Length: 586
Ligand SMILES: [Zn+2]
Image 1 (tube, rainbow, N blue to C red):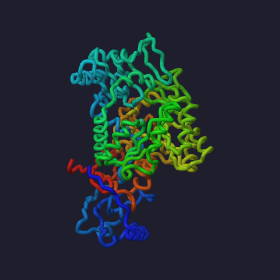
Image 2 (spheres, helix red, strand yellow):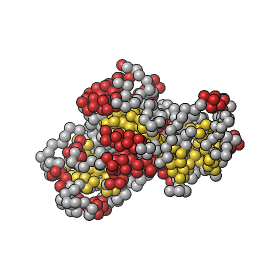
Image 3 (cartoon, rainbow, N blue to C red):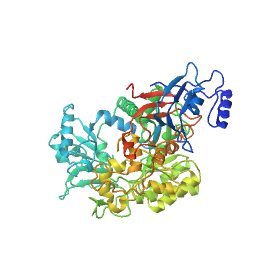
């Protein structure tokens, strides 16, 4: 991928740029400083504070130097200027995903068995059987992406399903949420999980009526198997990241927050950066574990890196902060709730209100440790009880040491209570913290499983985007890839439509009262997301002085009927003024 080093503009040009600002967005170039690239004859949704739409913009040294009418912008061209005629097409800022596991997801995509599109247990078993053909006896088979909500049988895959085709090779199939999975009997044996194995703290070994493990392991119960599964090699890790970046470019996404990484992934990112191959803005959160000791170790790793918004490679790689898990998943019914989970929509999962995945008091001490060190914290919290605990913790540490601007976030924030929404609103206004990083595509991709588990009443409180708007709460949009597909168009669509994939419990079990319009949805995938990556000064809107990160689309997302948002096609992606994807030259 082409890369370039951006220079600070010459002082004369800075004056010209300032003059341009005063003149309403048009900058006159000083001699010899004409645009290197212009986009014209388009509808450019700038996502500036007034949501201005312009015809054209000009780029120099990877930055936007002017926005305005075709006439104004074409005056900035010279003999060497490259011109892109948009032919009426729409451009937006490069999209921002505030939560996507692109390093892990790329490895899964390239090296694991894919199960996200299987619609029966039998089909999943046959995929495993096919995958085994390439493996040596005894080698692990890894697969990802299954979801019982998409299976005709509407049940978990079990060890006995897998044993039929793989009696000897250990098999581990991760659920699409990443919070549970299924092992075959060979894998359970290696992990020493049997009928007499107790559930670990913050984990569940799923069992049949006789108490025999079914193979499904949730949360911390997965650890015994995950410790045995071979990790990707450094080369696989690097190749996986490059695969993901290519996919992002095809979808107009130019910035991503990759949460929950460890040293090998950081090293892979740095090595790609050093080779000039990291054609993306990437901000990472280091996994902080669930103990004070693991938190100290994460703090040490972070302390060796520059603090955001400082970066490596001119905004390409940022060590943004840490990730802590407060609870589990809405898929596994392990997220921490005030009231018991449902099953099959209206049945009660009696006695199961989920659980915290980090001891709540330990969590509070971990947050204090990072906050006092000035480190950004993203906490995974899905259930209402977990979210309350997280926002109350943030409020407490901020009241004690009111450092603004750390942007502590609530990752997922699936069903916040009214109290949590009040606290988020206060935290954003007072401390520039407490931001939800919400994944609208959960309602679609996980929607049928979610509707079954949250039940009819709670479902209406899922991802209350409209209530956020009313309370002045800004959120970062995201996919949680590979939990859902990475394309942001799905999230833009889901923010507006709130529809499930299969409609098992009706098309709109989450209601439509919390839907927002495309303008708010696009903000969550651009300027609001950029803030959560500490990059709002340079990306997220198309304004003078910002990075020229741009996506060109086949249709105008402000004008098309909202059901079509999902099918938008990205035709051109520009990063720092360089074309990184062109659909005409795939
Ligand atoms: Zn995640």
